[in-house]
Length: 277
Image (cartoon, rainbow, N blue to C red; front, side):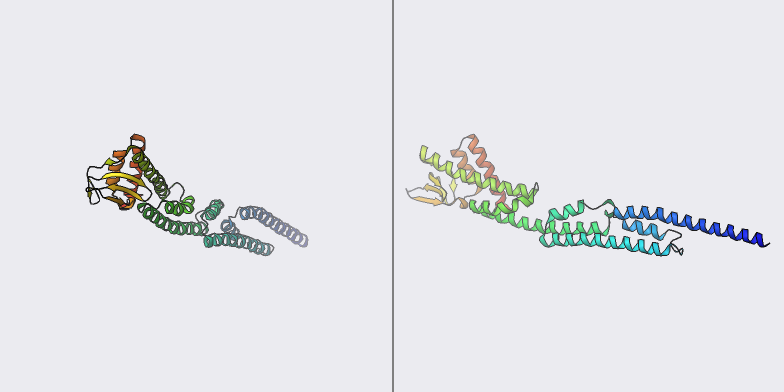
């Protein structure tokens, strides 16, 4: 009986030792898998897998499991805090490029998470603010165009243009700048043509003058000879788009006429606020 008991004890000890070895080996395998998940920034899955390890409370494992859990949590917090610091810095400076770069660099495990959603929300807020600012720029440039203040058109449009990219707002701004250039050239060409050919009779009403003669044109406006022999100067901004087109059609041939009409159409849209809608 003594020998039998000793045999049973040895068998029992051997089974316990094998159980411990199996648990230790399983935990080692798990550790390798969880460290890989940690390095892939898949922290939540790693913690979930660790919590579901059936022997994580085993006496020889519990300390190792707790240490591994703390390591994963520490790595998670450090990584996410780093992302938040970068996001906060980009938000303060309203750096859309940095925010989009940060979002695009997120590992697959963080896609669709609070982290990605926070970055996406910050991008949306800044884009909305920027769109409002850009619309204000477009409005200001459009007003400058209707006042024939071409230098102001160029100056106001220069800095904001790059941020607009290939958008409707960007194209609207380009059309205003292009129209300013063409209208400025139209004034020069009108003046040159009238100086070359002499005065030209305009059939109709320009502002309050009926059938005036067009005498000269420059940056200041259009000089008229009115009935009775007097002269008058009409500022370009005082002429309606339809009158400008009629003047262009009277003076210009096809190529110059097409460019002038296109610019006048943009001017008309700016006056009514329809451009870009």
